[in-house]
Image (cartoon, rainbow, N blue to C red):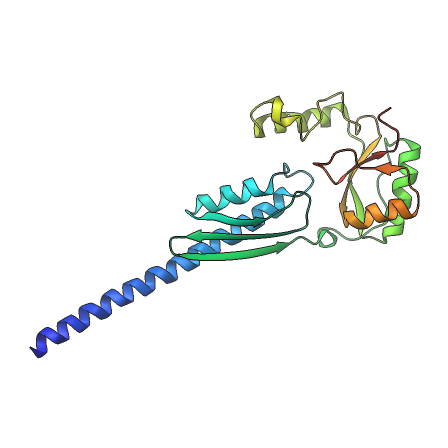
Length: 218
Protein backbone atom coordinates (compact mmCIF):
# COMPACT_ATOMS: atom_id res chain seq x y z
CA UNK A 1 0.00 0.00 0.00
CA UNK A 2 2.85 2.36 0.85
CA UNK A 3 4.53 1.58 -2.48
CA UNK A 4 1.31 2.34 -4.39
CA UNK A 5 0.81 5.60 -2.51
CA UNK A 6 4.39 6.61 -3.20
CA UNK A 7 3.94 5.81 -6.89
CA UNK A 8 0.74 7.86 -7.06
CA UNK A 9 2.38 10.80 -5.35
CA UNK A 10 5.35 10.62 -7.71
CA UNK A 11 3.04 10.46 -10.74
CA UNK A 12 0.97 13.38 -9.37
CA UNK A 13 4.07 15.51 -8.86
CA UNK A 14 5.22 14.73 -12.38
CA UNK A 15 1.87 15.81 -13.86
CA UNK A 16 1.91 18.98 -11.76
CA UNK A 17 5.44 19.77 -12.92
CA UNK A 18 4.42 19.31 -16.56
CA UNK A 19 1.38 21.57 -16.12
CA UNK A 20 3.43 24.31 -14.46
CA UNK A 21 6.05 24.01 -17.17
CA UNK A 22 3.40 24.26 -19.90
CA UNK A 23 1.85 27.38 -18.36
CA UNK A 24 5.28 28.97 -17.90
CA UNK A 25 6.13 28.22 -21.52
CA UNK A 26 2.81 29.65 -22.72
CA UNK A 27 3.32 32.82 -20.73
CA UNK A 28 6.79 33.32 -22.16
CA UNK A 29 5.54 32.69 -25.68
CA UNK A 30 2.57 35.01 -25.17
CA UNK A 31 4.86 37.78 -23.96
CA UNK A 32 7.12 37.26 -26.95
CA UNK A 33 4.07 37.54 -29.22
CA UNK A 34 2.93 40.73 -27.48
CA UNK A 35 6.40 42.27 -27.74
CA UNK A 36 6.70 41.39 -31.42
CA UNK A 37 3.21 42.65 -32.20
CA UNK A 38 3.62 46.02 -30.49
CA UNK A 39 7.02 46.63 -32.08
CA UNK A 40 5.58 45.80 -35.50
CA UNK A 41 2.70 48.19 -34.88
CA UNK A 42 5.08 50.98 -33.85
CA UNK A 43 7.23 50.45 -36.94
CA UNK A 44 4.17 50.40 -39.19
CA UNK A 45 3.01 53.71 -37.78
CA UNK A 46 6.10 55.47 -39.10
CA UNK A 47 6.16 57.57 -42.24
CA UNK A 48 7.06 54.70 -44.55
CA UNK A 49 5.55 51.79 -42.67
CA UNK A 50 2.41 51.48 -44.75
CA UNK A 51 -0.04 52.98 -42.31
CA UNK A 52 -1.90 50.00 -40.78
CA UNK A 53 -0.39 49.24 -37.34
CA UNK A 54 -3.29 47.01 -36.24
CA UNK A 55 -2.90 44.75 -39.26
CA UNK A 56 0.82 44.29 -38.62
CA UNK A 57 0.21 43.63 -34.92
CA UNK A 58 -2.21 40.83 -35.81
CA UNK A 59 0.19 39.35 -38.36
CA UNK A 60 3.13 39.21 -35.97
CA UNK A 61 1.03 37.84 -33.13
CA UNK A 62 -0.48 35.11 -35.29
CA UNK A 63 2.98 34.07 -36.44
CA UNK A 64 3.60 32.83 -32.89
CA UNK A 65 0.13 31.31 -32.52
CA UNK A 66 -1.33 34.16 -30.46
CA UNK A 67 -4.33 36.35 -31.10
CA UNK A 68 -4.66 40.09 -30.58
CA UNK A 69 -7.57 40.98 -28.27
CA UNK A 70 -6.75 44.66 -27.87
CA UNK A 71 -4.66 47.03 -29.97
CA UNK A 72 -4.40 50.70 -29.08
CA UNK A 73 -2.58 51.43 -32.32
CA UNK A 74 -3.66 54.64 -34.00
CA UNK A 75 -2.07 55.47 -37.31
CA UNK A 76 0.68 58.04 -36.97
CA UNK A 77 0.86 57.68 -33.18
CA UNK A 78 4.19 57.29 -31.43
CA UNK A 79 2.81 55.05 -28.63
CA UNK A 80 1.28 51.60 -29.14
CA UNK A 81 -0.22 49.07 -26.72
CA UNK A 82 -1.14 45.48 -27.58
CA UNK A 83 -2.73 42.65 -25.60
CA UNK A 84 -2.65 39.07 -26.87
CA UNK A 85 -3.90 35.69 -25.73
CA UNK A 86 -2.29 32.30 -26.21
CA UNK A 87 -4.13 29.31 -24.88
CA UNK A 88 -5.20 30.14 -21.33
CA UNK A 89 -2.76 33.00 -20.77
CA UNK A 90 -2.56 36.59 -21.90
CA UNK A 91 0.20 39.18 -22.14
CA UNK A 92 0.46 42.81 -23.07
CA UNK A 93 3.20 45.15 -24.18
CA UNK A 94 3.62 48.84 -24.85
CA UNK A 95 6.05 50.58 -27.18
CA UNK A 96 6.83 54.27 -27.28
CA UNK A 97 8.80 55.65 -30.20
CA UNK A 98 10.90 58.68 -29.34
CA UNK A 99 11.78 60.21 -32.73
CA UNK A 100 14.39 62.43 -31.10
CA UNK A 101 16.48 59.33 -30.40
CA UNK A 102 16.59 58.19 -34.00
CA UNK A 103 19.12 60.82 -35.01
CA UNK A 104 20.73 63.90 -33.47
CA UNK A 105 18.33 66.80 -33.08
CA UNK A 106 18.94 69.51 -35.60
CA UNK A 107 17.25 72.68 -36.75
CA UNK A 108 18.80 72.30 -40.21
CA UNK A 109 17.30 70.48 -43.18
CA UNK A 110 17.98 69.96 -46.87
CA UNK A 111 16.07 72.60 -48.84
CA UNK A 112 17.27 71.53 -52.26
CA UNK A 113 14.40 71.17 -54.72
CA UNK A 114 11.77 72.73 -52.44
CA UNK A 115 9.81 75.74 -53.58
CA UNK A 116 11.13 78.83 -51.74
CA UNK A 117 7.86 79.60 -49.87
CA UNK A 118 7.68 76.02 -48.58
CA UNK A 119 11.36 75.98 -47.66
CA UNK A 120 10.99 79.21 -45.69
CA UNK A 121 7.90 77.98 -43.82
CA UNK A 122 9.48 74.64 -42.94
CA UNK A 123 12.69 76.33 -41.81
CA UNK A 124 10.67 78.54 -39.45
CA UNK A 125 8.74 75.53 -38.13
CA UNK A 126 11.81 73.39 -37.48
CA UNK A 127 13.58 76.31 -35.81
CA UNK A 128 10.60 77.07 -33.55
CA UNK A 129 10.40 73.40 -32.54
CA UNK A 130 14.00 73.43 -31.23
CA UNK A 131 14.79 69.98 -32.56
CA UNK A 132 11.46 68.34 -31.65
CA UNK A 133 10.40 68.35 -35.31
CA UNK A 134 12.56 67.43 -38.30
CA UNK A 135 12.23 66.83 -42.02
CA UNK A 136 12.70 63.22 -43.16
CA UNK A 137 11.65 63.64 -46.79
CA UNK A 138 11.47 66.70 -49.01
CA UNK A 139 11.92 66.92 -52.76
CA UNK A 140 11.83 63.64 -54.68
CA UNK A 141 12.87 63.02 -58.23
CA UNK A 142 10.60 61.10 -60.60
CA UNK A 143 12.91 58.12 -60.18
CA UNK A 144 12.68 58.18 -56.39
CA UNK A 145 8.90 58.42 -56.53
CA UNK A 146 8.79 55.50 -58.96
CA UNK A 147 10.77 53.35 -56.52
CA UNK A 148 8.31 54.13 -53.72
CA UNK A 149 5.37 53.40 -56.03
CA UNK A 150 6.77 50.03 -57.11
CA UNK A 151 7.31 49.06 -53.47
CA UNK A 152 3.73 50.02 -52.66
CA UNK A 153 2.40 47.98 -55.59
CA UNK A 154 4.18 44.89 -54.27
CA UNK A 155 3.17 45.54 -50.68
CA UNK A 156 -0.53 46.10 -51.39
CA UNK A 157 -0.93 43.76 -54.37
CA UNK A 158 -1.93 46.40 -56.87
CA UNK A 159 -2.69 50.08 -57.43
CA UNK A 160 -6.15 50.22 -55.83
CA UNK A 161 -4.78 50.08 -52.29
CA UNK A 162 -1.29 51.38 -53.02
CA UNK A 163 -2.60 54.74 -54.18
CA UNK A 164 -3.94 55.41 -50.68
CA UNK A 165 -0.38 55.45 -49.35
CA UNK A 166 1.92 56.47 -52.18
CA UNK A 167 1.21 58.89 -55.02
CA UNK A 168 1.69 57.69 -58.56
CA UNK A 169 4.87 58.95 -60.20
CA UNK A 170 4.18 62.30 -61.77
CA UNK A 171 1.41 63.21 -59.30
CA UNK A 172 3.29 63.60 -56.02
CA UNK A 173 3.63 67.04 -54.46
CA UNK A 174 7.12 65.94 -53.42
CA UNK A 175 8.14 65.85 -57.07
CA UNK A 176 7.03 69.47 -57.43
CA UNK A 177 8.90 70.59 -54.33
CA UNK A 178 5.62 71.44 -52.58
CA UNK A 179 5.57 68.81 -49.82
CA UNK A 180 7.67 67.51 -46.95
CA UNK A 181 7.33 64.61 -44.54
CA UNK A 182 8.03 65.46 -40.93
CA UNK A 183 8.93 63.34 -37.92
CA UNK A 184 9.00 64.03 -34.22
CA UNK A 185 6.28 65.80 -32.28
CA UNK A 186 3.64 66.27 -34.98
CA UNK A 187 1.12 67.71 -32.51
CA UNK A 188 3.65 70.38 -31.61
CA UNK A 189 4.22 71.01 -35.32
CA UNK A 190 0.50 71.60 -35.83
CA UNK A 191 0.38 74.02 -32.89
CA UNK A 192 3.42 75.94 -34.08
CA UNK A 193 1.98 76.25 -37.58
CA UNK A 194 -1.11 77.86 -36.11
CA UNK A 195 0.77 80.04 -33.64
CA UNK A 196 3.23 81.36 -36.21
CA UNK A 197 0.68 81.54 -39.05
CA UNK A 198 2.82 79.38 -41.30
CA UNK A 199 1.42 78.49 -44.74
CA UNK A 200 1.48 74.75 -44.12
CA UNK A 201 -1.32 72.18 -43.89
CA UNK A 202 -1.93 68.43 -43.74
CA UNK A 203 -4.21 67.45 -46.63
CA UNK A 204 -3.95 63.67 -46.16
CA UNK A 205 -5.78 62.36 -43.06
CA UNK A 206 -4.09 58.96 -43.36
CA UNK A 207 -0.60 60.56 -43.45
CA UNK A 208 -0.32 62.97 -40.51
CA UNK A 209 3.39 63.41 -41.24
CA UNK A 210 2.76 64.83 -44.73
CA UNK A 211 2.74 68.64 -44.93
CA UNK A 212 2.23 70.79 -48.00
CA UNK A 213 2.40 74.46 -48.89
CA UNK A 214 -0.99 76.00 -48.26
CA UNK A 215 -2.85 76.57 -51.52
CA UNK A 216 -0.63 74.21 -53.50
CA UNK A 217 -3.60 72.09 -54.56
CA UNK A 218 -5.25 74.89 -56.46
